[in-house]
Image (cartoon, rainbow, N blue to C red):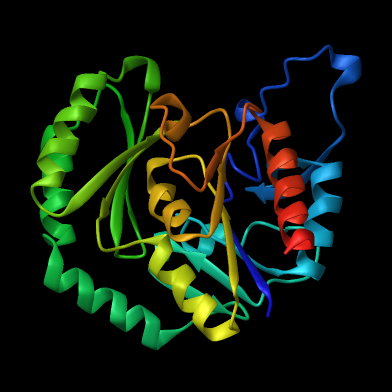
Amino acid sequence: MPALVASDLDRTLIYSAAALALTMPDARAPRLLCVEVHESKPLSYMTETAARLLTELGDAAVFVPTTTRTRKQYQRINLPGPEPTYAICANGGHLLVDGVSDPDWHAQVTARLADQCAPLAEVQDHLLRVADPVWVRKHRVADDLFAYLVVERELLQEDWVKELAVWAENRGWTVSLQGRKIYAVPKPLTKSAAMREVARRTGADLTLAAGDSLLDADLLLAADRGWRPGHGELADTGWTAPAIRALPDRGVLAGERILWEFLEAVRGA
């Protein structure tokens, strides 16, 4: 039976220039491979070693990129290795099969959201009312499923995020601060549900996962084994669980370490 590896992408396997955390002397920095270009500019990277490991992993397991990105944002990424048959986008709102969203899965998700949480329009309206234009740079809606703000972090008050989280909690939504983005996501919209569906379809008897943010917690808990890097929301709060390994590595080298861990687990299964 195949092993299934569901991994978050941004700040887990791939990194922007600002998130690389290259603390070593320049001459000892790892060689980097650009895996995403946006508006004709390089945007995301992994180490060349990580690229080789991901190629090996794609041959040894069912690798499922698992991201909060929209389908359009995900499709900008050019990962090394075999083209994944499955990918999870929009935090589980879309299950891509050979690059195409599965309509039955998406219909199930939207029906669940309609039944279990406040509508997106209510959250959008609230964000427009309470977010301060001084620090908000963009208001965005992702695939008509959730909303996020692009902000200036140095101007953002942490109490504001906490207050938003309480407001959202009472309406069946959750809030996550990742880099310069504040996400408001319906609680029933989860990466874990989509991962379970891929495991069902593939017959996987071992599920492995990795992620760095609050929106990855359900994915990690649903997997047989999980890893989190030494940066991000989960590390900042000290979040852990019995089957989760908290790695000390930070930045792009954490992505390399996570892929080593995946491969060892798959080969040892």
